[in-house]
Amino acid sequence: MKKHIQTDLNAIDVMSDDMIDTSDAPELTDNFFSTAKWRIPKTKVKVTIEIEPDVLDWFKSDTKNYKHQLAAALRLYAYAHQKKFSY
Image (cartoon, rainbow, N blue to C red):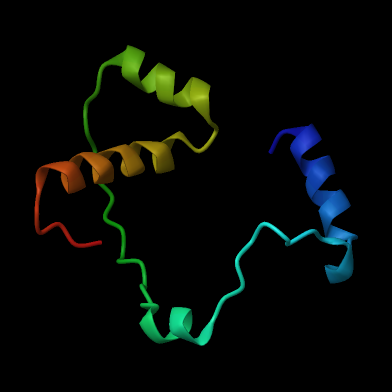
């Protein structure tokens, strides 16, 4: 994690609940909880794929967690192209 981000997280960690401004966050009502669905992530499968080096370089340059970003991009693509894609 980048150092300045870790520093910000440390500042948040020392804050009490009363010090955090939640005025822009809606309160969760009983209706929210009555319609909420619990989703447990499916077990992941390891695969090996071949992609062009420039595509991999782009994902690596954008984030340290490039494998997660690649998986998210594939999920978005699949979701956009399949009406019954479940996640």
